[in-house]
Amino acid sequence: MSSSGWVSSSVPYVAPRKNAQGDAWGEEAAARGGVGSQRVVRAGEVPAPPGVARLLMVEEGAAVVVRQRVIYLDDQPVELTDTYYPVEVARGTRLEGTRKIRGGAVTLLAELGYSAHRVREEVSARMPTDAERHVLGLGDAEPVLCMTRLTMDADGRRFQVDESVFPATAQRLRYELEPRI
Image 1: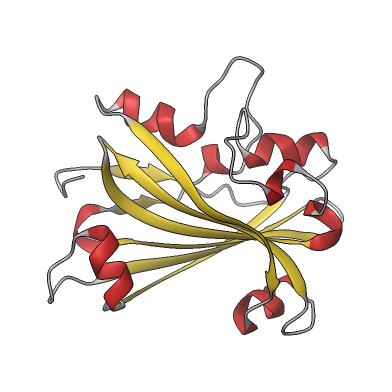
Image 2: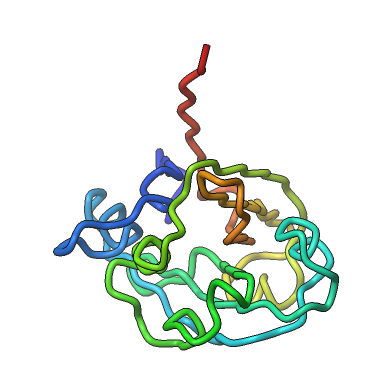
């Protein structure tokens, strides 16, 4: 991915997909002439890290389900994303596995009764860890953007936290807001 105008919107990533639609990242990349893919490198129950526990409103160290993914553009890693779910949402579902989920996790979550009604994102910048630098192929002086997304349903239930890391120089985020008056 280059910094030459790549703009990403979060909306397709929190909306369930229609039956024949592929995943949001694959479609976004294809619309820009690339091939988007991802690989789930780890999935299953883990103790909730402090920030995730706070956002999901569970005890620190309580069991949560995580899907850790490497996101690719034209076979080059461009993003690392860890997605966390409360065990009462994800236990016993395909979210615990490393296989691809048709339509993506948000489509499965909608089938389970969890659809995004409110989404909160926070973005910050920092220098990458050694592991992030290695996987993303970054130089010593290249920063990363970190985005944390909390997704809630219409009843205010917190059912998903995404923690994403991507090269800062290769991304521009777009937020479109509709004020409610």
